[in-house]
Image 1: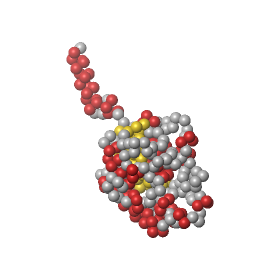
Image 2: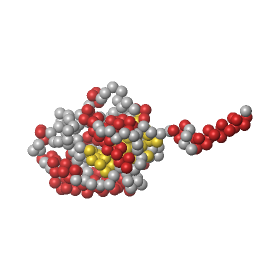
Image 3: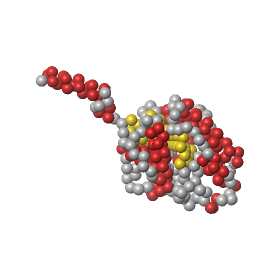
Image 4: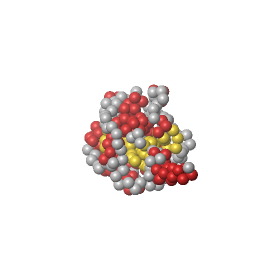
Length: 283
């Protein structure tokens, strides 16, 4: 009997070492940077979230602005305990992050999903220039991604920005170049030359803002964003998504649709890298 117990103990150790026991079954955490401006930070109304959302909360974590992991709940960009003033949003609402994580957790049942909110409202792409100092938006995202990366794999970036650039023809024309530089910097500084990135094209401009100088190059910016062609980078559209009464920010329902679209696009990029499996059905 003693020999049998000894053999079983050795077998159990070998199974764990081979990834067949409890340690091998433990899912990996894929984390994603949420960057850009207010529609990524989120302005959707919290009271319009469905009860119990997100459904897969046990497999979705948020690296909060206080630099600690917590169960994901909206608003993800909650300023409580904020460590980086450069990315401070005092009144965040529902963004696409939770819906993204819920859908991706369905597409990738073998992983946990981590979220790293880094967006801030009313910022230009020039303010996202690759400056690694902690006081910059990029530097803040890099610092937070590296901290989150201690307990997860930083697997991609979600980016939604452009509204603040629409007033300047020069900024619009520079958008594709600046965005390419930002993608290259994340890939370089996070040590992943193929880091997947999914970005949102700005949507339709509400009639109330047509003719406003702040948005006079809106349609041109949409064209320039649509022309971005970078390896491992995908764009999702937001034209058909409903806006709040302010005519700029997405409603809660729209953010949930957008989150699922972002998940589908990111899943496709992860598939190409051999990091994903499962269904690829549309939203």
